[in-house]
Image 1 (tube, rainbow, N blue to C red):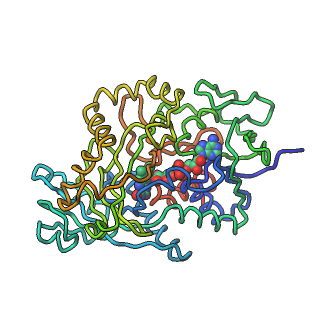
Image 2 (image 1 turned 180 degrees about the horizontal axis):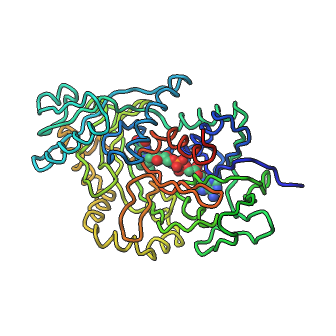
Image 3 (image 1 turned 45 degrees about the horizontal axis):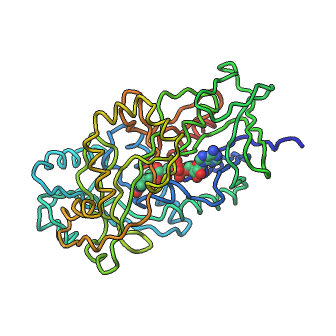
Length: 422
Ligand SMILES: Cc1cc2nc3c(=O)[nH]c(=O)nc-3n(C[C@H](O)[C@H](O)[C@H](O)COP(=O)(O)OP(=O)(O)OC[C@H]3O[C@@H](n4cnc5c(N)ncnc54)[C@H](O)[C@@H]3O)c2cc1C
C-alpha cells in the first residue's frame, strides 16, 4: 500500500506545532498533517506550565522573544475571544524585597518600556499593597498587560479549528526515522546519524512512525516541533545543530484553599539576568486556585517529572555534553540551591515567604511539575532566544521555552513565512 502523502508534516502537536498548523491552514495550505507520539494532547510543556500570558517585559528589545511574545499575545487574546476560551488580563506585580534588587527592577521597567509596554507603574511599599494586600517589598513594578489562560485548553481548541479547516491530526504516532525519496537508508534517531543526501536538493521526505495506523508518510516539507526531543529529531532529519536540549524540571506547590486569599493575581521576584528562568512566583490559575513555582532543577529524563523518573541514556547524554559540564562548573552553587529547594519544602517556602510573610509552610502542597526544553550551547550558555532553523527541506524549532506558549501563533506565522511566504 503506498504511503499517504502530505504537503507538510508537523512532528509534535504541542502548542507550537498546532500554532504552526493554524498559520499554514489560514494561508490556504490544504495538505497539513500533524503527528504526536502521545495519545492525548498537551501531555508535555504545553499542559504543564504556569498558564501565564506574558506581556513581553523581560526580553532583549528586537529579539525574537520580544517581537513574537508581543505579537503572539495579541493573536492569542483574539483567538481566545473568537473561540470562547476563558482568559483574563489581570496584570502582575514584580517585587523587589531587597534594596540590592532595585537597580535590576529599574532596568526591567526600562526594558518593558523599550518593548512597547504602556502603563507600567513603579510602586512603593504602600502602593503595592493596593494591588496585592499581603505582599511585602521595597519597590514593585506593576505590568497591566499580563494575563492567565489554560494552555491545554488553548491547544485543544487549536487542534479543533485545525481539523475543521481540513487538517489531519494523528495522535499515538511517534516519529521513528526518516529518509529522502530515492532509497537512501533510514536515519534513526541516533545522535551519530549522518545526512546522506546532497545539500540544496530537496527530494521528498519519507517518514516512518511507530504507529500501525500510519506506518509511513511522504511529505514535501517536515516541521520539527517536538519540544524536548527536537534536537534528536533534527539530527535524524540530517541537521547538525551544535546545541543540545537539556531538560530542566520546574516543580510547583499549590496553596491550600484557605491560603489562596493571600494572592489576588500574579506575584513575581526580580529575575536573575544570568538565567532564562524567572524564579518561583505565585500564579492564580484561570480554573481556580493558586500555584507557587516553578523552580528549575535538572531532570534525569527528558520527560522526567519526578526525581524517580530516570533515563540512563538521557543522563549519559547530558553528562557527556561539554556544554552541560561548563554550565555546571559555572553555576553549581545556584544549582545546589535549587536542588535543596526541590527536596525541602521548608526551603521552597522560605523563597516564597520573602514576598508573603503570612504564608505558612503548611499552606504549601506538592503539585504537578513541567519540564522545560532548554537549549544549551557548547560553551555552556543557555540559549536565550527562540531558535528556528531551516535545513534542507525541514524546519526545526530548536529552542522554544517560555514565552513560547504566549507566542505560539506568532511563532507559527514565522514558520509559515519560511514555508509559504505571503
Ligand atoms: C514549568 C514551565 C512553565 C512555563 N510557563 C509558561 C508560561 O506561563 N507562559 C508561557 O508562555 N510559556 C510557559 N512555558 C513555556 C511553554 O510551556 C513552552 O514554551 C511551550 O509549551 C512549548 O510548546 P511546544 O509545542 O514546543 O512543546 P510541547 O508542548 O512539549 O510539545 C511537543 C510535542 O512533541 C511531541 N513529540 C516529541 N517527540 C515526538 C516524536 N518522536 N514523535 C511525535 N511527537 C513527538 C510531544 O509528545 C509533545 O506533544 C513554561 C514551560 C514550563 C516547562
